[in-house]
Image 1 (cartoon, rainbow, N blue to C red):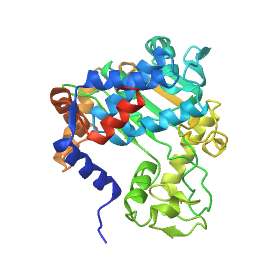
Image 2: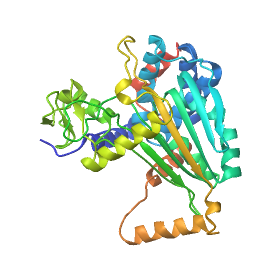
Image 3: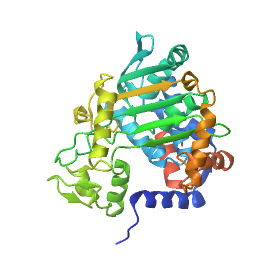
Image 4: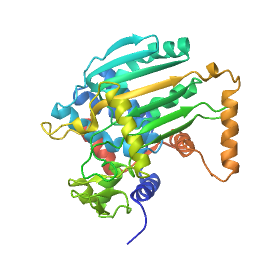
Length: 355
């Protein structure tokens, strides 16, 4: 049995596609995805935002959150689980606290509806919080936080999901994969951005392993009886993933449930119930943003100090920082086009209603 992980197999598959796939210019992919969203019931504004977001993930190599997700978006829209025309409501809860009700719509349009006022609050107060509820987030988190760092700000975001992660020692899923993202400006370079889940591996990687007939690494999941398993089908059929790092990852998953659901007024991962909406895949929960103006720290050289820390890390032997591979792929695909397998491109065109 191979010791290759699903994540490595996915990366290898992408690399192979990069050699044989059809190169699609970024703007053309955005336009194609926008037609798909419009055809399946979103407003023009929502279609434009989601298309840009999804194409950006594909462009940067975040393929598990790129066009791979389009059938899930379509399934959620067709089932009536999500409102593709929702109009979010923005409420000021204090001088540095925004509440946003996404009205059962997608998170990114709700976030962007409040972003300008949110930035004003950050500049005025040095820090601000945005709490989004009743929102469907189905993408990576780094596109949400990277732009803040490019504006000289430090940003954190937290989002919970549908229940697919068991607490340490437990037998039933309580948490979502519950990712968090962090972005900081770096003097003389791109922002340092990480985006990572609290689970041992991504739910999408489990689905890939089940489809391809591969085992998952030991310590990644349990079956429906709470027993350790390396069978991805057992994890998906009533089982669950484990948090990374045992109780430490479990504590982080708990924290994210509190920040993204309890604090925002969104659903806990375990409260997500789409059983009456066959085909739905987008979890309706909540998301929290915390954005800080580092100039308020009074150091006068924040971005330079971060750059120095990165230098120390690399001198110690770490070969690359989070986000660097993403930036390299971005430069390459913007130049050469985004490689898409012919079958995937044909699927997207069919969803868009193209002849």
